[in-house]
Amino acid sequence: KNEVEQSPQNLTAQEGEFITINCSYSVGISALHWLQQHPGGGIVSLFMLSSGKKKHGRLIATINIQEKHSSLHITASHPRDSAVYICAVTSGGGADGLTFGKGTHLIIQP
Amino acid sequence: EAGVTQFPSHSVIEKGQTVTLRCDPISGHDNLYWYRRVMGKEIKFLLHFVKESKQDESGMPNNRFLAERTGGTYSTLKVQPAELEDSGVYFCASSRISRGRYEVYEQFFGPGTRLTVL
Image 1 (cartoon, each protein chain N blue to C red):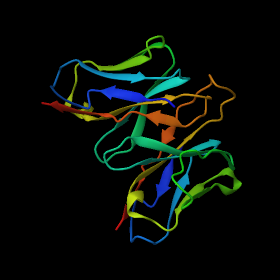
Image 2: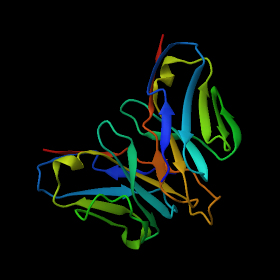
Image 3: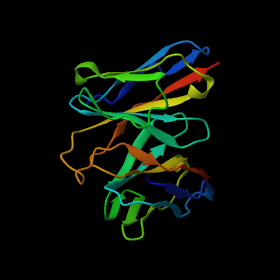
């Protein structure tokens, strides 16, 4: 059974700061997912990755398969980035259900 | 393309009553998942359908929970009888079919159903 740990659990930062959220897992995976949930909103997939690095706008996700670790970075953070960021992994077959971390509550203050 | 929809958005019932949650996946998505988040805890997997077949129901808490996906389209999750600890947000997600371990597709989530059992 995969254990997914995220850190920090809560993060408050000032607008413009560089944000890093970390995720580690215990067992080899098929893919790692970064998800976002705004207050009162639904869950949206930001990235799905199995190696290397992906970038979308101000968001960057990296993964180190050997170290079983991934990071989500936000550059030039903005108050609209305030949300819960969730790391989840697909451990077995490609279509297996996800195993989730507890999430990181991010607040960006203007 | 319409997203994943769930009904109802909220449900408040009394302990011992029955509730049925519905999920309509994205058209053409053969994989359908049910997840649940209980207050203060991480989201947890309940079960996975491939078309109308249950692929994995290892996350179902107990036999008070019954999921169906007749015809391989929409799915229902029935809780009977509901208990206090069943309160939480129930999410449904869907994805395209994958042909192997390393073919992973993004899961698209519905808005969730908030269930409160009093």
